[in-house]
Image (tube, rainbow, N blue to C red; front, side):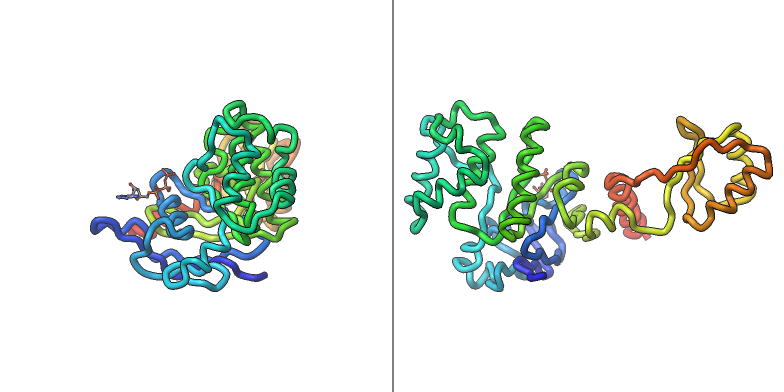
Length: 309
Ligand SMILES: Nc1ncnc2c1ncn2[C@@H]1O[C@H](COP(=O)(O)OP(=O)(O)OP(=O)(O)O)[C@@H](O)[C@H]1O
């Protein structure tokens, strides 16, 4: 995997307050990296530093090996970004907007515009005025605009904000397509876990200006040996008491169909023997998939507990 973006101990201090605290991570070509955190965590500030809209107090960011601090032009030349709302002229057509933009950035051909319009699925409506576009279509036009100069890195700050489910899905599909077919590195920020889970290969969790965790989405969800199982058992109360006696540290709770427990897989046969020996009927045992949200809450609360010492 080839690294294209690297943040090295990036820190931002504004008016004596540390907004971003020594953040380091790498993003590879062909991957979608999600930057996830609650409102005010520091996502936008970090993205502004990556795209060169804001200075870095200490540390450095390289893009394609070029430092955003000392080789600004070369570094930003690799980037296509939608950070603030893309500038669009509403009374011009989508196509006129792209032509206007292409004139400002030299070396973009008409063929390139046509290819990009096709890529973002706007061919049917590109000659309509932008004021008639839905928010999702405007986002896609914005995407087309920042793809015109063939960037290696695409950076989107909260790209699905304000979109309806169909619009969210479209953006998600284009983001995945660009990573897969154009080998682009994509950095997206969001405070929505479910969205990150579907869109990203890896996510970095940011909290209070610190990067608290970076993991692959699959591993992130499945990390740890303990799995949550749902036990459909009758009588559930008797089973719960029995488990409390035999597994003093077990995390077990009532659920809609019986009980949920957190246990490693190896323990299941003994658990079944125990329940059967006590005449408890077992109608089913199934693994409950942990969501990214569960893991996110685990990770952030672990970090908070560690910080409190
Ligand atoms: N120019 C500034 N001056 C002072 N404080 C700032 C400035 N820019 C950002 N901050 C503060 O830095 C923190 C991080 O803000 P940032 O916008 O990066 O968060 P975010 O994770 O993008 O949140 P959101 O999703 O709400 O945009 C916030 O507490 C914010 O108030």
